Picture 1 (cartoon, rainbow, N blue to C red):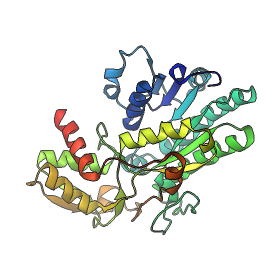
Picture 2: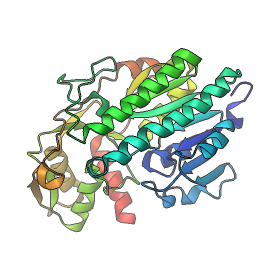
Picture 3: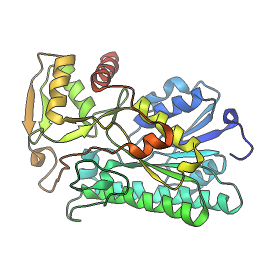
Length: 333
């Protein structure tokens, strides 16, 4: 980073063949970066970046960031590191809690250790750590801000393993900032959606759109009164690169997403209206969707004051436009 112009920067994106990672790859290429994409394709898909691989500024490495030698090799070449690789989706978390914990914590430790070694030699490489709104757990507040308490359920409920493991990632990143002056910024994603997102791991909007295109039914869990906010991936990846580009954001946590709430039932109804008015909606219990141990979060709305003040962040795409973009993408497959 030191002494480099933006056009000479090499950015490493772990999980770069995933939904958010592939869009971030495109965004950084458009800014003139060289990009090293690392992905083991456990949840990412190579066709997400297929069209980018002919670009001479892209290097794709199919491998796991649990491999210390690979992590050391790519981190040593990086001017920026965007660590997005993680266990993905409520369905996967409910079924594979061991994998969730290991895939979320161990690679973050490897990456930060290597960046810490570089920092000790005077090379301070900015690092973005992708976190999640899941870290707020069951905090009962109407709107969540970055300094709020994290309120998790019992360890006998596997779904909390995701939020807890991502909270450990945050603690690690902030500890490296404090102890080694490593410029780490943490972003908590709130329901990022858009083209290329798969419904295979329980992601609600692509699942609804796919069902509507098939003629239904759209399956709504529980009573559908859970509240979420949906942000287009283009707005989110722009925020990620802006946060990394601004030195005084280091050592802080930022909510990233939309702050416009919608119930899951209303989301389903809007998908039906915009994608296929003949599609139907059905309800399913959490026990049937996952298992008896599953607990949900009823309301998830971020306070965006901090990121707005830091980089002037404001989502540009509304929910209807997002639904249309997802439907257009899925119709093209």
